[in-house]
Each structure stands twice: as C-alpha cells, then as structure tokens.
Length: 167
Image (cartoon, rainbow, N blue to C red; front, side):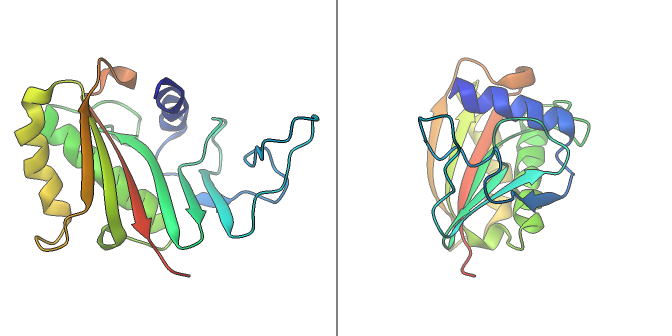
C-alpha cells in the first residue's frame, strides 16, 4: 500500500490532466522481473499508460487483455492539491478515475470493481453519496473498502478501479 501511495504522489505532482501514452516495448515501465540486469518484455496483451511527463515508477492505467487497472486516485485538483471535505474529495477522486479511463478510450460504465481507502470511516456515508452518482443504480461495481491510517498529501480518500474494455 505504501509503495503505491508514494508513487501516486509523484504522479499528482506531474498533474493528473496530462495525456497518457503507451510505454514503448522494452521501456522502464515493463519491469518484467528479470534478475540478470535486463528488463524483460511484457507479456503479449499488456499495455502501460503513463502521463507523458511523469517520472514516477508506475502507470496510471494498465491494460491486461480486456481489463483496465486504474491506479489509486486521490481527491485532488489538477494542481495536485487536496480539495475540501469528504464530498468534494470523493468527487475529485471519481472525476480523476473517469478522466484516466477517458484517456484510454473507456469510461465509468465499464468499471466493475473498486477499492476505496478512507482515513476516517465516519465519512463513509458522505463518500457513498458521491460515489453512487457515477454509476447506474443497477450497475454498481463490486467494491471493497478499508480504513487506513494516512494517505498522501493528507487526503481523506483514495479510490482504484478495474474496468472491462474489450479491444
């Protein structure tokens, strides 16, 4: 959890509104697990999407076949600043997920699983009020939620999602 959150901080500082590009084969994103000092090529069907100017060691979206994995998004604005109370942060986090999916040709209707991290579980109802507005009532994603001690930048919420996006 800590590694993902620290990487997210770097992406936020680079700006969440940046365009995403697929990483070239053999690039540093691929970390295929080779132990002899070389970088292995990713398996066929795996694509990595990162903001063009970011230097963080993770991708904002990864496609594995027909599944998109969206890295955790905080409730921050385009300047990477945490915004307002839980309702405002929840909207910003969900907007950031929607924007990331949009940059790879998908959208919130394709989301089937979310993981929510809250620093204050008493804010659960405030988060849910915003969250449900991003999905059709009969198509709510499967979801896990947990209380966490802290999130980057002092944020109150982080959300990551999986989406089905056939090619």
